[in-house]
Amino acid sequence: MPDQSLPQTRTVEAPRGEAVSENASPGEGISRRRLLGTAGATGLVLGAAGGAVGYASAPAGATPLTSLGEDMAMFHGKHQPGITEGLQARGHLVAFDLAAGAGRKEAAALLRRWSTTAQRLMAGEAAAQDDTDVARDAGPSSLTITFGFGNSFFSRTGLEKQRPGSLDPLPDFSSDHLDKARSNGDLWVQIGANDALVAFHALRTIQKDAGSAAKVRWQMNGFNRTPGATSHKLTARNLMGQLDGTRNPKPTESDFDKRIFVPASGSADPAWMANGSYAVVRRIRMLLDDWEKLSVHAQENVVGRRKSNGAALSGGGETTAMDLEKTDANGALVVPINAHARIARPDQNGGAAMLRRPFSYHDGIAADGTPDAGLLFVCWQADPLRGFVTVQRKLDRGDALSTYIRHEASGLFAVPGGAAEGEYVGQRLLEG
Image 1 (tube, one colour):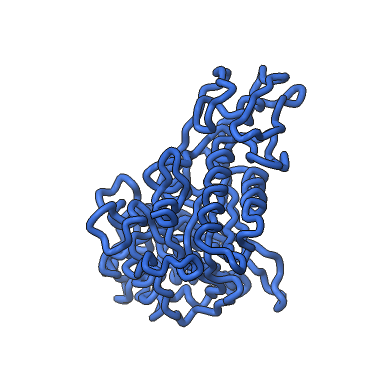
Image 2 (cartoon, helix red, strand yellow):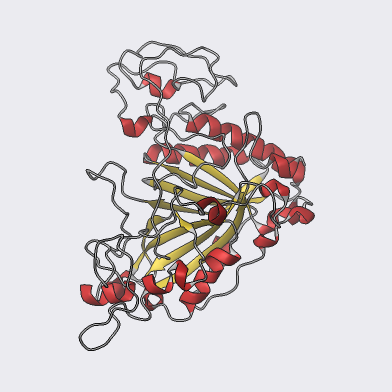
């Protein structure tokens, strides 16, 4: 779990009370769901592209949406949503395998359906068919839906020649205790939102859209602190109680795109991956019973940062540069040589960096009586070999934190660039 911080959420808010054309597209004006959740919307009937029904009128005395419900991420763009936005309160990660006999044609039809669904739901609209009404009275709530391809997808669709070299299987690590049934997959979908029902509604709709073309291989559910729960933005804490994400690369940094996204030209990756990224997904169980037996001082030495405010043990505040050479009165390094934050630093790994965008999870009590809880680690990079693999190899050789975590599932997915207007995600691969 490298030591890095997250960028601000990218949101778009439509004005309240603005009239909407009956034939407005999901990205125009204000969505039906948002309009119907605001004062004065009662009794208004809106049509929807694709013949969707439901959401026809707001319930009597409908409560206006707050800004949390109104926040909307954009589906169309240079990059897919769900990468540079801030942490969301609720998340679902789900992998699918194509059904027996399904190939390139069926995969293209599925990605077309999924893209239509993602566009509509992210705009606060109902699903095009058979909407469940789970999120009927909710707004977009910063919903993002992101799609990726696993290594096996390319052989299943006859597209082996288009498989990126960066999708070669990840190497084994000493902390791995991987469950193959909960790892990898032909297709991967990441869903995030700031409302649990909105996220579940998207998950259920995506699963229904898969139809006979694909079946769920595995699903994982996670959470973060709800944005706005604190008076000002704070770095998230993980289930160990540590600030998690202090040194994440930021979009304002000059080399951010170079580190996180595949360039449109001059890359060894196939052309269809232009402006895309690679997602490494790891289910990392935290051995909380063992961790919580440590004193706060011992926990801080494991991580290399203060538990209270995330400051490096060498002094200063959360963002103060770590002094790796500082010693105490006895000549010992203030930041231990095996501290997680020291080992994970980009300057200790040839500049390797990744954008971490995780969710915490808690799946009850395991068979051994310990909490089945930890981190759904998701990181983004232009090249997983130079990003995740480089850092994890270093951590594997002596990270003090490795005693208290266990990697139980893993996946690597190629996430193509964003879909332009009129396109579906992956179209340049599947129809190129």
